[in-house]
Image (tube, rainbow, N blue to C red; front, side, top):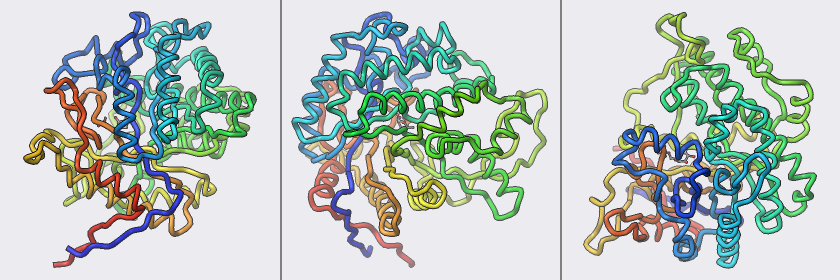
Length: 476
Ligand code: BGP
């Protein structure tokens, strides 16, 4: 196969990500510090693959020094994780800090910096405290928005002088979509209005935290943004009905966060649709003003797969509460390339298409790929004689996506880097350790010991040589 050499621009960041709850484990956690996810794991243990979950995860809480050693060996310039809100405080109302946990975060950040790795910290990667979910309905409550701001203030006071890259949320649309829109998780309630309220309250929380960040004077040396997961949406055809399906999907799932965060306002068409279907979120003029005045400095985008839709082919069942699927249904493209383990289509051009959109529709704001990666099941079968996992599929996946991304960068798109999901194998919601994502293997049969995979050495060369080879299309 013919190869092409691709250059990586000098300052283009190449890093990797994980989150707190997916790696830390419960070591040192107090009983009152469950997150929503911890409770879901405890209550619905059977739906988690092989029973694994956040309880031990990768035991990062105890093994972070060892892991940072591997990060250094690979040469990562940036590492993203989150601070676990439910563990950072012992009292969420008055924001009393858990000193043990805070000392661990302090040390982890220091260790990263001492090893030349820039920490990128997210304030919420689904770790909303369970008690706030039970008492107030979680992100459906404006009181919880205020508590999040209090939490953020404590975090900024402690680490604001060390960390230069901050984010309010990771994928803020996800939890409520699974919980209230699709009702596939505890507490199994289908309520589209609640879904919208969570969406709005998280956008409002982002704006309030951005405002706090600026008031605290942190903008002089640091940036604050949000990590979003726009699903690059393609209509089946150019016909108006399919185009409308894609546009409306995009409004409800992508623009619902992209627009308030970057443009400071919601699309009028989204307001119209919300009104038509009686799902408008409770809001005030003053709050919309806060959103308007506090746009983010930059955004991280998590891009994994394309989303394909077409107009509905059957009538909507009017007894079902409104769901955006009223306007679309999934389109299954014949012959698409799949990652069969995760069930996601592989279509690297999403990088380029989204990049151009950021340039054309979002004022060429600074952004970066905050997550992209490939989860593969039973990776042990790829171990070589020496016991190293030879994950050539991951190397191919990364190169194909990077190639499209860097093409856009060459064309003037303001994308500043690529962060792989994930630094190490880790726990996914429900899938737990089923699909492995890491550059670093976590061996569950051997005390969770770590070992670099082939992709880690490839990543190491990518970072030091700032170039990589990709396969050219082959026409046979
Ligand atoms: C993203 C999340 C990550 C991670 C990743 C992989 O949506 O931000 O936390 O889990 O997806 O997906 P999954 O874990 O569902 O396989």
